[in-house]
Image 1 (tube, rainbow, N blue to C red):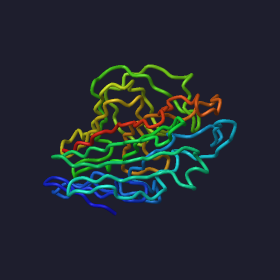
Image 2: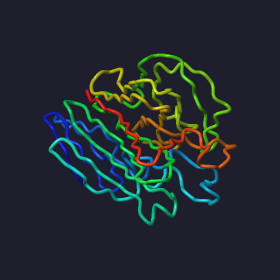
Image 3: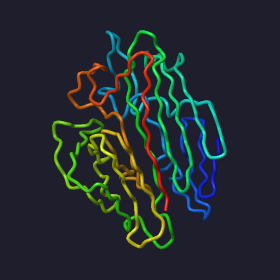
Image 4: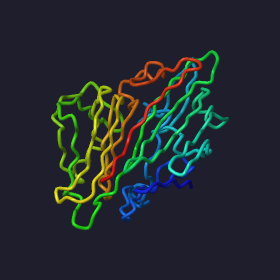
Length: 290
C-alpha cells in the first residue's frame, strides 16, 4: 500500500492493481467504497487492456484466439512504484509471460495519482515499446464513491448531475454486452439515485470526448464529490443490484464492451485504441471533493 497526502486529503493506493482504496479528507470523510465482499469487493479497479466483456470472453488477433475475462487483467496484477513524492505517486506495469498469454502485445502502463488542493488527479499513460507492431487496447476507470457522505443524508438523497446539461446517447446492455444497435437519445442532466436505477446493470452514455463533469451531491447538503474528464468517449454509471451497496461508480472509459454481434477481431472492436510503435497514449480524470 502506498499513501500520499496534502493539507486536505489523504489517498491510499494498493500496489495490487494500482487501485485507489481510500480517499479521505482531513475531517475524516471517506469518499471511497469500502469493498464489502458481500456486495462488491473492489474500490476503484483499473480496466485494461479491455473495458467490459468480450463476446464469449475471447478475441482473435492475427489468426490466433485469446481468452480474457471482463475488464482485463491489470486490476489483478502487481504494479511497481516508479516515482513517489509526498502528494503524488506513479505506478508502472509492463507486459510479462502471464499477460502475453492473454494479450500478445508489449506495453508499459503508468498510473499516476496526484493530490492538489481538494482534488485527486488520476493519469493513464500507455506506451507501445514495440519497434514494429501496433498496440490495440482499451482502458477505463471504475471508482466507487461511498454514499452517504454525511450523517444527515441517505443514499436516495443523492443526485448525479452532468455538466454540460444536454441530451446524450444511451447505450443499453444486452446481458454483459453493449447493444449499440439499440442506442437511444436521453436527457440525463440529473439522475436521482435509487438502487433500482441499476436493475439492468450499468447506465452507459456517450461523452464524445467533450469535457464533462459529473457531480454526486445530496439534496440535504453536506459533502459531495465530482469527477471531470476531458476526452473520454464513454462513461458508465453503476452500482450493485439486486444485492445492494451504498456506493455509486462514475466510470470514464476509453473503450466499451463488445456488441452482441461483434466479429471478435480485436482490430475491429468498437472503441479500441490503436497505438503505433513507440507511441504513447495519455489520458486521465480528476476527482474533486467538497
